[in-house]
Amino acid sequence: MRKIVILIIFIFTAAWLPAGDDHLNCFSIVAGKDATSDGSVLLAHNEDDYGRLLVNVYKVAAQEHGKGDMVVLKSGATLPQVKNTPALLWLEIPESDFADSYVNEYGVAVTSDSCPSREDKPELVKGGIGFMLRRLIAERAQTAREGVRIAGELISQFGYNASGRTYIIADPREGWFLHVVKGKHWIARRVPDNELAVIANCYTIGLVDLSDKKNFLGSPDLIEYAIQRGWYDPKKDGDFDFARAYSDPDDLADMKNILRQWQGTNLLASKSRELDERLPFSFKPKRAIRLNDLFHVLRDHYEGSEYDLSDNYKNGSPNSGKNRTICTESTQYAFVAQLRDWLPAEIAHVAWICFRRPDSNAFSPWYVTADQFPDGYGLSNAADALKNHFSPLAGQALEDSGLAFNAFARLSEMVDKQYKIRIEKTQKLWRNHEDFLFRDVKDHEKEFAYLLKTNKTVAQKIIANYFHNLEYNKWFLALELLREFR
Image (tube, rainbow, N blue to C red; front, side, top):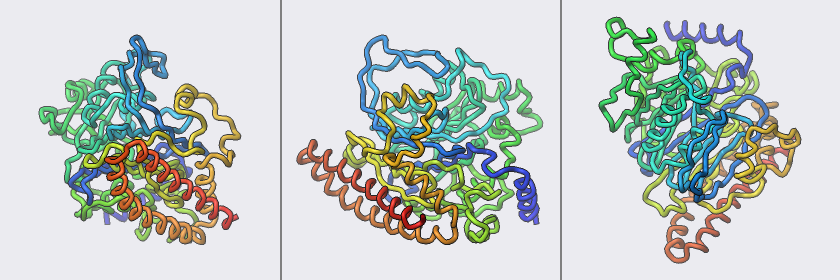
């Protein structure tokens, strides 16, 4: 009965909200190395940002910096650059503060989800830090734990200048959720190796134990500050709960967040949970997690459940309904970082990237350490992209047929126009394509490992050509579907 009441309240409330009203509803999953079928750590993410945007992928080369070189934050504040920065894979959405993702050559991956806090008196130094935080993590960390520590130091130094956010940081050994509050407070928790953690735009760390250095890192005055602000009363509230103390109360109770986290958890967990029960920070999976298990979740619209308001697509596209789904109208890109420590460095870390909505496009592998990335997947070069990140994007860029993202974006838009008719054919094509890739990549990586021992220079060229061809083939298939749907 309580479940029915919650559903009625949710539908009634959603009816007053325009589709896409909350346009920063990202979604992320971390799977620990003992929870996956191959022993890799997996980080899955849907990046949601409203509007017709552009997504670029850049290879940022490893660099040596001179004495006196400085990093300039968006606010104008500066800090010394480190001597050496590693090579990076950079997923960029121009003009956006909080939409980029990175994987560096050490296999440290970082992305984020908006998580509004209740902080209204933040301590900021020289405008604080925001946009550059994830890049500095990627440029300076050789492990996820080190990335958390670096982020904590920067937040403590400058203060975080957005309402609140969770940075998801992973490497081949472990994954972390780092909750950041506007100002100088933060908490991070490690995902257990044999479990998964899901997040959908609200803080998920509840109980905190800063004495457990293996699993928690954070601001030392976290509890004292919450007491001072009146957000936590030890006598009345019992054990300190970070999410309840620091979250924007409306955000914590928002069904758009609760329903997506509940769905992601139940799709993967060994134990199903009721919608009205407190969801755990992490949980054990129903079986060893594979890449396509996470692809499936990132494509989800509550199909087959009472929360699918499209009625099996009879009411049109599920991406633009009143019910906020995991894959949705504003999803600009998705990826699953597959982070492995038993393979040669040249093939150990792979970002399986899907452009625009994953329900109507496919994932394919990008090797992080490849010297070059395919042409047509970036508007310029990596250096110019960073320099001009906040410059207005030329309107013609969104119509440029020489940019791959535009083809994938148009395909998602064309499928949405006649969703029920077109999605079955589209998904069948991409399912066959991905099934082929799983087998083909596995076979080729055995060859690559052998070639890297024989002639590393030649092997690196072969690896780059291989995944370039896979990506171009995906682009071609998208164009073929577009011709058919016109």
